[in-house]
Amino acid sequence: MTPLPKVEVMLHEPRAGRLAAWGNALLAGRVSPDEAAQRVVGSDSVHRVVGLPDEAGPVGLTLALGRLRTLGVVGLRVALPVPGHPLGLSGPPAFNEAALTAGEAVPAQGASLGLVPEVREAGPAGDVLTEVVWRCLPSRQAPPADVPSLGEAERELAEVLRDVTADLAELDVAGAGPVARAQLDAYRARTERERRLLAPGYPPRAVRVLELAQRVGALVTIATDPEHGRAVSAGQIGARDRLLRPVERTARRARVAAYNSYLEERERQQG
Image 1: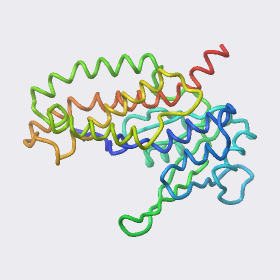
Image 2 (image 1 turned 180 degrees about the vertical axis):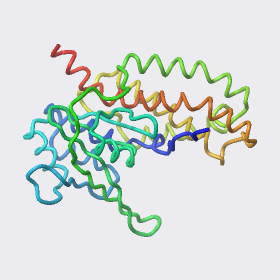
Image 3 (image 1 turned 90 degrees about the vertical axis):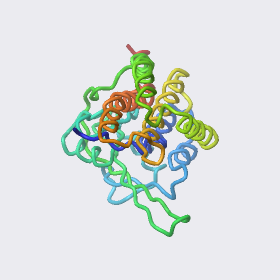
């Protein structure tokens, strides 16, 4: 059986999500370049972009976002692919491969470009400096793979939770019991203190879907963590993974739909 994809990212906001959300707000004129760059960097040390057309070397994030605008970029999407599920990608193969390695990417709308993060960490424990290098690569202007509409994503989340909650409780695995719920509550409290969901210009429904998707993703992460799990036999682990696989996939699809809803709404208004 193919193991569940690594879902540690579900406990954190993906960098691709921050870049797309605040990049879209900047492109729409809703935030300043400095605020957008600050929000994208977050707790990292620095973000740089390499490979921009007509730029010989790395440039800062503020300059890079302005450069993308002059190149014709009108919006940014999010891709969160895993092996066997190229979620949000549209090619070409080189871009898809880089995005799959990173587990995330930001395809642009309006110009055949995309950004893929490479994370570098250095320093002792407790004082780690995180540098993110975004590689600008050719990306195909085509419908992204397997991305639902915001409404579809919200319905799918509700359905998958309804379908698996009772089975998880009956199986008595992590994610259904009081310890897991306490962990999930702690995660929610931490994320509410530390960050703001999405950016100006996103519809309220997108915030609601993203919040639910991240909570569901956190549930999957906690449920598959041996520290909190009680599914110890091979049979229990297999049953748990079969139940959680569609949950993890649905949560990732919903996250991408939420981040991409800015362009979904823009296209709806223009159409």
